[in-house]
Length: 160
Image (cartoon, rainbow, N blue to C red; front, side):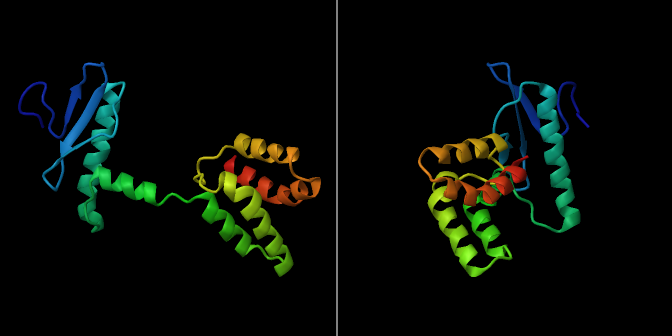
């Protein structure tokens, strides 16, 4: 509970010269942790502080060690699954003959991975997959497009 009118009980919110808001708090490591960006509304900054307060309070109950927002964001970025990894795993798990698997791997390595391999699985839109697939028609024989169709369809369904 705030001791003085206008003061928060936990954390701090400041209004920047741009008119946006930045929230921060002092964590268990006794360092000040700020938001990665800014908020257009004070209410959103308060929401971020409330979520951080909830996380700080709940780590005692779960037994997991407390992690700063920066460390959690870094771990989240590191845990991103790329299409490169997903595609190779998807091909490996298909119940197909070895010759078909080899064909899929060749098509993946030559036509999909160079263009889409570094994209995070959560990032591509169905439109991006359709655009990539339509772009194959210019320099690829119809047979290649036909063989890539199941993979493109699976990726497109995954994105929708």
